[in-house]
Length: 605
Image (cartoon, rainbow, N blue to C red; front, side, top):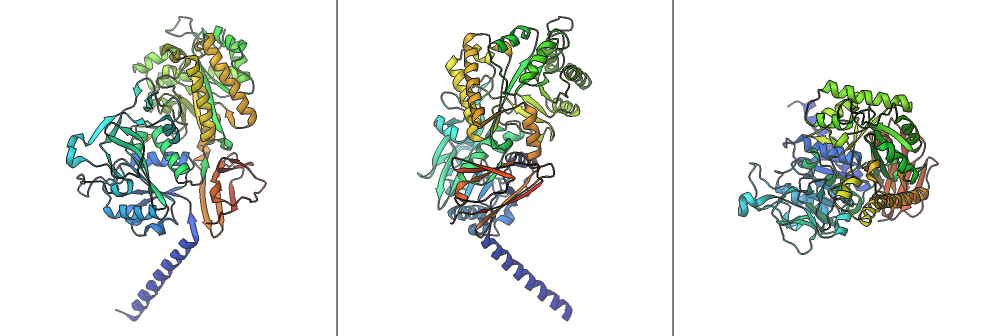
């Protein structure tokens, strides 16, 4: 070996030692507020990873992916300088080694928060089920029963919360749980999930929800930290078109349990509603004026009216359509004063839905029918039609959304992902569109429109409770939801009273500045901009350094900082407004900046 090569090796060794020491020094003086998602690089399910990634982006949660190989290189205390919370997702870490669990336990004992989902650590490297899951001692839940139960180790079951309060804690909105606290679907009743047979192994484990086969959602103190167990496949559900569970449970884990700073996925950090009226046929020539005369639509509340514009409804030539270019035109002009006009399908409401559902329309025909509907409405309104609602909820994915994207639309009402927030929905394992946002309906158990509630004999009080609960939910959680119906649905004094009482409450919250009601496109444009925001929260010595950047602008972006992280007094630049809500500081960026750095005094440990 040459003398030159020996010197080179010596210099390299000195550099590596110096680099490691520098890294450790920085780590002890810097804390990055972030979520770490631990995964197995050998796991092939990219759809689940993409599902988690999309929700974390849309919720403004700072996060990084870390392979389990890198994760086990540092002990739990060191990890706390890189992450304050760890997630072991479903499908992405089934075969991780036992060493990972010991590191995770160290992390929790030192104050970190850990979330284990469904099948994490359930199998060995050969793919065989372990005798017990590697996280049993951390979670206090034995979630692998294959040796004992074989085919009965995983079953299909409903998910039942212990109480309505427990469902609310995990950010399940009103209307998504039954009176017996089961998680509900739209139309079909209680939802079915793949769940493992489980049993408690620790008396300190707090159970929030169960199946008949054992705990499904639990939380346990571990040292200075906590460990959370969720026994349904959150990522796989999102990848298959059910967004709510992943989004709601992640939000609770990150915001409430881990208390991490993050961005708020609504303009100015306010709760938001979309009140979406579907105008289907010529019966609305009577019911739209009735709504106006009963003051069920009021100026200052920005409703959405999605209109099927053609002169026919059930078949060509029947003359039963809304006829927006003819007799319906004055009504379109009138309702424009109360909100935004969107498209409600392809020219003939029932005929279009019937033929679309039965695959009797080619892609070219679908495009043509939606386009002429849009053009008719644009000729009346004077602005492009950029939002859409499917007649009778018939929205075949991904073709329908691809057509909307081709037509330049940015948002659509959706019966999938029921009860969840606006999102870039998934179908068959992939994101349908990066440019067109789905707005799921907000159900009231297995109904969504007032007509359906009447058919199911909901009382006026039950409807009022659901409406008021939905409004309070979006305000408290600082999120967005869509409720919808048809003008002709308000065909009884009882239903009109329920909705009028709700609108009274909406006006009160609008005046207080705690709520916003906007058409779909407003929230869609904001969300599509928000996901492009690069965000970091770093504590260096006695300061939090918050940095945001977005080439499309930061106006109306809101930062949520837990008050416990900050000193009681601080100074903000004129470009940022603040308000305190409960235990959180909300900082809203006012002008259209592209880059912002805040320096805030950190609370003393």
